[in-house]
Image (cartoon, rainbow, N blue to C red; front, side):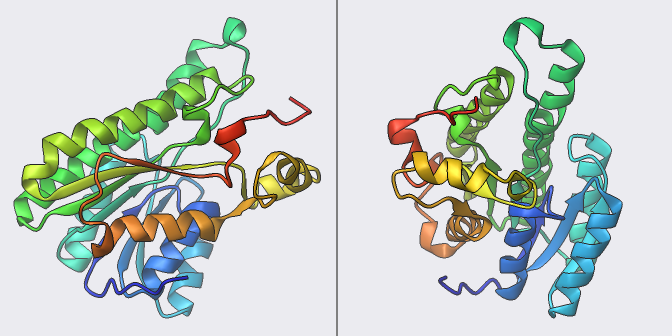
Length: 257
């Protein structure tokens, strides 16, 4: 892993108590950044915050649904209050709801879009207002998915939200460039997390259909995020980086689906 220096940088990462989000926070803090960690699970959030602080990292927690506008304001306000500014936002939080299109329920659609779209859109908006106020520029990262590129069984609604985030990154890259704000997305493929590793067949199934024969880890995704937050990526904006071991090049679905 390349070791970046994010001394004096301040970030918000949503959905960050476990999995990809937690790895992003760990890497940011180990590189010198101060991080506002958000999650909806109070126990997991407390555990994550304790681990980061025990490792010498600087972080503060904001409990709440990342799709809630009040929670979004609390995150930005806490970043500024605790650390004096805001530099990075990683809208990592997202939920997945499986379901056939014909039977998909409106309440499931509202729950899905409130987090995946509303939360990401308005967190980016709140952060942008702070970036402009500071006149310092900034970085915004949206978490997409390979399902925003390739059709996947029973994930029409989810895939739609992820494709929308990639279009949002492209649109905002133009609108926010005059303010020295870059906006990009990362689209993970199959990734080993606490949730996916609870499925005994997950790793073997995805290794079999991934060209590299390797399932991504949370570090693979986090490494990409940190690159996009670094000065090395200053000319990259409006883009989506797919991290999937080549799966979207061939796109075979898992056998069980």
